[in-house]
Amino acid sequence: MGYKVVIVGATGNVGREMLNILAEREFPVDEIAALASRRSLGTEVSFGDRTLKTQDLATFDFTGWDMALFAIGSDATKEYAPKAAGAGCVVIDNSSLYRYDPDVPLVVPEVNADAVLGYTKKNIIANPNCSTAQMVVALKPLHDRARIKRVVVSTYQSVSGAGKEGMDELWDQTKAVYNPVSDVPPSKFTKQIAFNVIPHIDVFMEDGSTKEEWKMVAETKKILDPKIKLTATCVRVPVFVGHSEALNIEFEEFLDEDEARDLLREAPGIMVIDKREDGGYITPVECVGDFATYISRIRQDSTLDNGLNLWCVSDNLRKGAALNAVQIAEVLGQKALKKG
Ligand SMILES: NC(=O)c1ccc[n+]([C@@H]2O[C@H](COP(=O)([O-])OP(=O)(O)OC[C@H]3O[C@@H](n4cnc5c(N)ncnc54)[C@H](OP(=O)(O)O)[C@@H]3O)[C@@H](O)[C@H]2O)c1
Image (cartoon, rainbow, N blue to C red; front, side, top):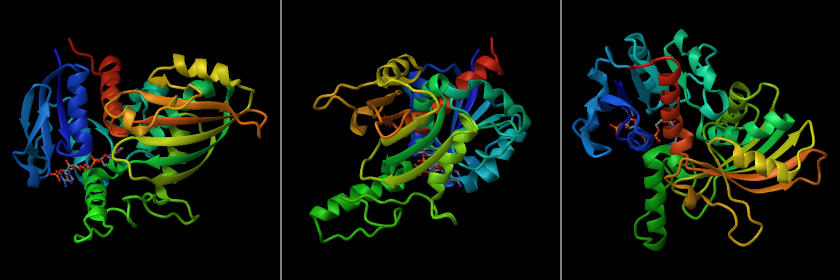
């Protein structure tokens, strides 16, 4: 006995990965529906060896379906997630719409799997921002051992975090640099992204930070520990897939770099690649298509009594979105919607 699963946004970057990962992890699926906007009606998407034809979200009836994995923008989610949840289908949402709602659990299974059980209030579970997901996987084992006081994080975020239009813009601008007859002005991004970096993701807040930076603060508190202080600078870089983060972590207790490396090696969802030699660390192109959050460059921060630095890289479309959503579906199946 398997589940009746709906993928909402099946033609997008995250939706396609959700279909791949459900098949790769052999999630028990009895029936599957791929939905997108009316524009994509009949578009074919792959699910393992099968090809699915995309249906129109606007006319789909969620009655009788077990779970719906949503990967569309917040506006469309606002319209359709309550319809699915109201029809008895549990929504696992990738947008930011419900992340800060006290009645909706925000879950990274390696960190707070039990929180899934809070889904019953609204029949909705939220997936965090891509930058937060990989970071809290890395922080959790260190926090359990030495209690984190403060984190300073700088991100290097790939263009796929801005959807398929973001990837097209980097591709088209890069080609235009070599073939200057065609000009590709910024559209999805605020400045040229090809051969450039942009210290601005999402809208500006009143205090001068950006919404992406605020999300990392608020989501870390909700998922890991409200007492952790965090400050972030989020930067878009001309990489197609894979987010990187430089983390500076201050602890209440001393944590030796070798012990930290051992703790991270043992922790779920993490791969440590940390040799102090040329190439002995991970870069985003090497993490594409993987499930793991990779950690490199683990070292003591000699300017703090109890401080460490590390480098954290993961496939933002996987751990940052689709994989995390499928892991939540797996936990939901194990803890609540048992079959068979
Ligand atoms: N990319 C990441 O790293 C990442 C990480 C975490 C969370 N997220 C979130 O996941 C969601 C999807 O991101 P993405 O990167 O996959 O975007 P994307 O590549 O631009 O895909 C968007 C998907 O949403 C569908 N869609 C848009 N408006 C719709 C509507 N009114 N009705 C039905 N379907 C609609 C699109 O269908 P059509 O093809 O028919 O237009 C497409 O399937 C966003 O909320 C994003 O913030 C993304």
